[in-house]
Length: 93
Image (cartoon, rainbow, N blue to C red; front, side, top):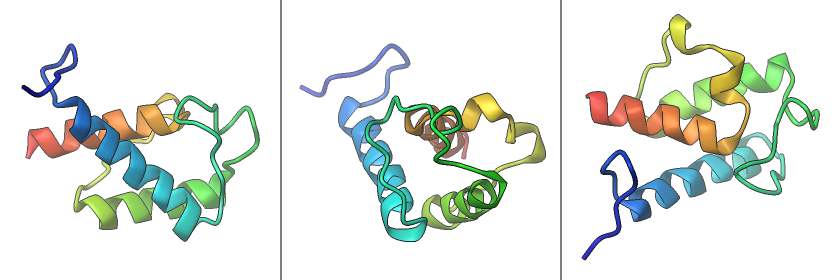
């Protein structure tokens, strides 16, 4: 039996997306993010250039489009929030 979160998503699918996002930071952006809850902005891990590179990498990796309406700081503050945005985009398709 698969474990599901409050939105009915598979927990293993959530972990997979989070791992892929951490991989983007490590492999494409050369940044080590300590945890999925680390505040990327407060800890000065992400500036405007990294943000642009991150959005492009996420769109390419997950085959999703990040609309202008989705470019809110809060949606990109942690790996967890980025992963949630991606999962929402994937389930909307």
